[in-house]
Image (cartoon, rainbow, N blue to C red; front, top):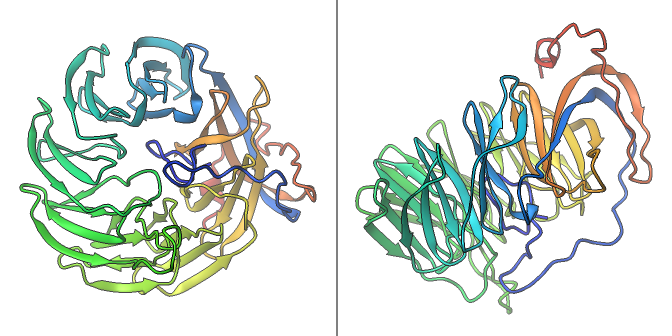
Length: 424
């Protein structure tokens, strides 16, 4: 589960919470009360990625174009797979390449380039069309953050606290800055955020910085977490979740810290909330939705910071990164359950347990919502497409944590859309 080593927008990974430590999944699944489901979940199709040799699906990540899916595994395997005209991912290889180092960040697709970072500190650019090497740049240490491209530069973080700006065509250094790292930190690094000539980055020290994208010059710095406690564990204050820029506000979440809305021009706070977390959060036109370190979910007004709701039903279920599904919130837990929620009230409106037709794998590694469907990648290397539709109110009988299949309501193939009938 994500504790919290992340790849692209992975839900969670099996890496430990700390560098050099491990956090095993609890043996006993926490109780989850039965619910009345207001939606039905229809499994559209599944495909198993058998074409990936010696895969370690815990590390899979992918980017997309209209016709191909680019997949990188932790074991260093890269492949481009075909995507048909129904957006179904097909286990048919366009090209594949085996790197000599484990991939720990990416892939990032930028024009004709596919970028990945490795555990040996390499930033590698390949041709998205053919998989041919374009260039390789050796950095100071493990490349932990997803590459961000703007102004002809590639911005990426290394595990030793350095932020690099590289030429996007050649990989040559343009500038590099260094931030002092604490003795103990969460494993991983959030991607930088770019907007209007500025970069925004969160550090393991609990600070947020605004930088000039052109030169790396620091424009401002502020803290959303301050180390407290006697031990290194207690004093960890990583900004682990990805920052979000939305409608002129910069949002950040700190571990053992706070949730903040920040003025991107000067670093001043619009509001601060006493919420500690490290998983990625989401923002839409009205709300800010967060899961804290204890798996409690919150909805806040994104302008005032007023709390809209609090949902404690998923405590200790190791909820992963949140995502938006049309006008609903989707949370996934470590036991393979998907929870669709009403964003206005924080009420769970639909639940399903993921399963595949190829084996016992049900740990969900990656979630993507596209074209009114939810796509999942699990630990068996199986990609599944789900459709969510309105249904009659029915009891989801799961008093011991075992789920039942939910039938689709659109059996006549009429093609009605959930969003047309249910405006939350």
